[in-house]
Image 1 (cartoon, one colour):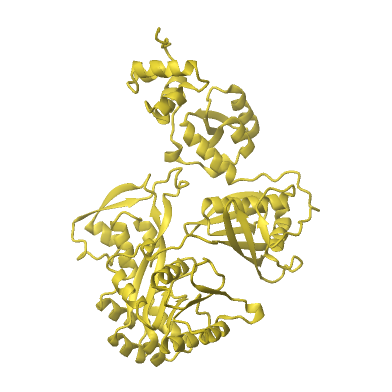
Image 2 (cartoon, helix red, strand yellow):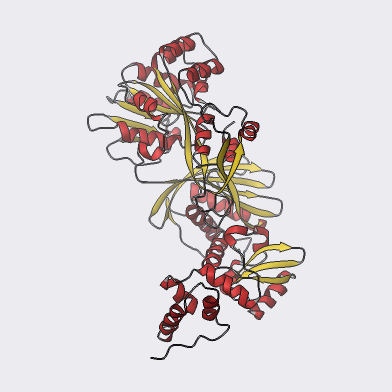
Amino acid sequence: MANAVLFPGSICSRLVDAGIITEAQAQEALEIQKTSKALIGSILTQLGYCTEDDIARTMAQKSGYRYVSINEIGVNVAAANLITPEMALRNNVLPLYQEDKTLYVAMKNPNDIITIDNLHLMTGLEICPLVVADMELAAAIENFANMNSSVENYDDDDQTEAVEETEELTLDDKPAVQLVNQIINNAIKSGASDVHIEALEKNLRVRFRIDGVLQEVMQNPIKIFPSVVSRVKVLGGMDIAEKRVPQDGRATVRYEDKTLDVRIATMPTVYGEKIVMRLLERNKGNVSIKDINFSKRQFPRFDKAIHMPYGFVLVTGPTGSGKSTTLYATLAEISTLEKNVITLEDPVERRMAGINQVQMNNRAGMTFAAALRSVLRSDPDIVMVGEIRDGETAKIAVEAALTGHMVLSTLHTNDAAGAVTRLEEMGVEPFLTASSLVGVLAQRLVRKLCPKCKEEYTLTREEMLKILPDFPVEEYPQEVYKVYKPKGCLTCNNTGYKGREAVFEFLTVTEEMKKLILDRANGAQIKKLAMEQGMFTLKNEGIYKVMEGKTSIEELLRVIV
């Protein structure tokens, strides 16, 4: 059988000339192409003879256009929004950035004159095609399309329809319904914890909180905002007519195989009501203590505290710092068939087998304090209170710990030492705190550096101390430190970070600590003693994560003072 002809100037020929593939590999790919409709580039990548990046670079040389990596340069949102998602998907193009009157556009076919002319007419700018790898372009276009919505044929008189308690997220003909569904869909796909929908002077803005940081994902005409607010209110069972005062609501939505509880809050602003939706996935797999990623030097102290037969253990931190996840992991660790475990939650975020979980209902009088009184008559061994919100709940929780129960709960304080003084401020007598409190765990969530694009660099000891004056040089005595910084790629949506990890400090209530509490010592005195007794602070643990290459110094300083 005669070998296939390698035409000069073809992709195969250029790849062979560049030494990327051999002539035999090119011949094999061309033979396969005779019986296949696939493109030669796809065949070569499937055979593993070259990468899409190799083909893109070769195409760039052939066409005379510049090759770029979207992973490296990212996508400018303002430039991308110069075209519609429909056009991007239809023509396999995506504007990456603009310089003066020139728009630089990633194109699957940089020689497509018709598309270039259409882009010129649409934007009024000169179009400069760029060559990128096919998979990079496809992923970037998909991300752009998912994060944008064009609301057309909108009628100001459109009214939202009533919905059932459980809402199936599917497309609907109504623009407001469609937009709200799309926003929630995209939020779930993006792994967002919160959705912010707010009115600006001329636009409706949507932001997602991803890995603890708000990111703008969408803007739409302001004219649809009232209908979007009405739709969300109907979804949450709130009063559509009331626009002057804040409201709270709840909804349950289904997306693919996920069921999520949505907590909705509205707040009147000068341009209209701001909406915040918190997304809580039901029936997540049980999280274990191992998943929490305690450092080896922290875990033994916490483990000893939670395995005490009775006492009060607090987890503190701001909203969204992972306190509930830590409590669920703790319950999974200490719960056994021989123990009666009851939780009081608002809302129940995870369903756990073998545990009695109680949903709070303030409207019906089922508050934490009222529920806790009832629970103590139900012969519990372990009680988990979702949050200490008032002095009454705090006093009952402390009394429960003093009467032979293990009580776990959360409190909003800046650090572990602050929890002791906070209990006093809530009216709990120091002698009760000293007698009941076993330990306090404070935590924060820091973003993890994207493993695909993080960049290594070095700092001298002097440079490190300039950035972090309290850097523990005795723990890290070297003269030069190897650390990492974020860069940004398509995998991490050009943020440089992907995922989060908890940073902890655990305060053990020792006999010396009890004396300080009885003397009504302030937070600084309590913290000083705790550190003398071996407590690693949040900053210490954050530095530990930095030195391990898990996060950056910038992220540490953003999250931990």
